[in-house]
View 1 (cartoon, rainbow, N blue to C red):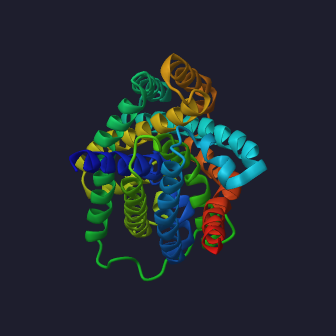
View 2: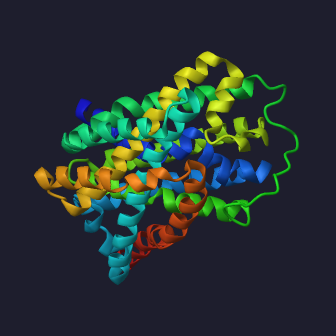
Length: 353
């Protein structure tokens, strides 16, 4: 029983940690996909909560069913001949996501400490490589420690920001006239889920051989619900500071500073931790795909990809999220559709026979 509880916690934190990365914890991601659509963004939060809970369950169900060691073990089941295309797209998204996480680390260090971006990038790079060299168990342990801290920090800042307002949320929020990630809140929500399931699938599918099905499925559903609640809190908090927060690359730091400078200092560290956990997950997902059996090749590939994405860190953090994340969303649509439909179709066929 204790082993199952510990494994549940590890899968849960792994799932949450892969989604709450640089973009999420910084507030920039929630700003782009939810807050920018005003009050309608809250309908988007409801949509993604349902999606995350269902998809977390499905990914863990399939992963444990096939005893998968990487996402390549389950893609053919989901996508047939299109699996090869999704394999390439997934690798590209993992590489791009890793670059964004490292760039976000530089942005936080620069915005708060006034230091060159390169210092934050290098620090995150060193820690990510160190964790990868410890293998899957160290990746799980790192998430088990860091994810609860950053989740608590994000929720605490959001709740305190909301509590300081005269009303739960502003009665009327008019979206600022600017370039949006999608034409409406529903499409933005779908794209958000689409790109955000690529890394979780890559990471969670690597656990299929070591997780009991019931434990994995329960952790998947629970993780999705927690993610939805957290997104909702950040969205409501952000709406109370809209449109001022659109001027900051790390909106959550702006919100934290409006509560108390002490929170801003603590939250800076925790946002950086959030970036680390997702950077680690991206590097692990890429390395486990190329070297599913682990060993020296896993470590070499994981280290190599960390250094290979350094050129991406030279680009603007907010622009990376605005441009790459929607592109990842479109690329991940085929995976999203497959996860939503194929398991149900196959289960339906089995019942008929």
